[in-house]
Image (cartoon, rainbow, N blue to C red):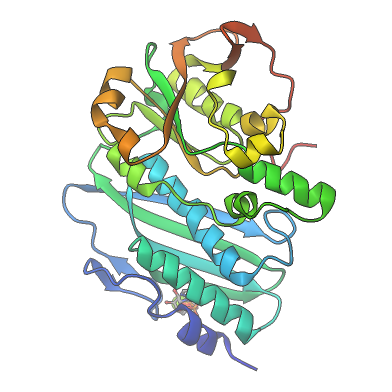
Length: 315
Ligand code: ADP
Ligand code: MG
């Protein structure tokens, strides 16, 4: 049987990109990093629990990807450049094949995004993964939820609803027949580069993890405004349209990990993001009204029927 320490040595040491600002990494009671003068440290954590956030049969490589990707997505939403991570790993038993695949995949995505694993905790119990991520942004520049202003346009990156459609197919049919949809669910691509490109331009941003309407409502409430969404503008993939999936999946389905942001239209036009990222204008910021988010279809207001976003404690 492998000890806790040999697990750490074999699978958690030297993982990811080695940063010069890291003074002390895995191996001491805590890690020490050097936050450069003039920078803010941006910190976030996300946990994934078997049976709640992923199916028990999800391959460890995909699990590692998603765990890091959802955390990178939070950095993206702040405009931060990710640098360090810590990992709290709770595993039911030591399975070297599982650990090897998990660690290799985490290393590969971490290296791609220049993230260094600098510490963590390893315990036995029901499979639960918690990753904390730390990034840097120029002092005071982080993009927050509270900056949306009346007259700003509302944008989203990529496509909406593909991951929710895959989840629905898996739950209702037992499998997902379209690999592109499955990829949206299992291998989300964090929009870190876009987040950094929006620094100084976006007035507010959020990553779409709980569903577009619910997440935009967070911006609306934090900014004391309302947001009007135009249904016909929502970016839907060919796979989504071919499946004739209900628009509610794009509005309320979770797990998109795209960036939704607000900014003056002229500013975004000037950034010429279109050549590099798929960005769609989906609505506008209006003065604070009865609802945080209002849906319009060809200008006419339509009611929001569906429950708004995923809530772990909702009964
Ligand atoms: P302590 O008992 O002092 O908290 P641990 O025995 O839990 O330390 O961990 C020893 C070292 O290994 C620490 O530097 C810790 O950050 C690191 N570590 C433990 N588990 C992990 C993990 N899953 N990933 C990365 N580093 C880890
Ligand atoms: Mg200690």
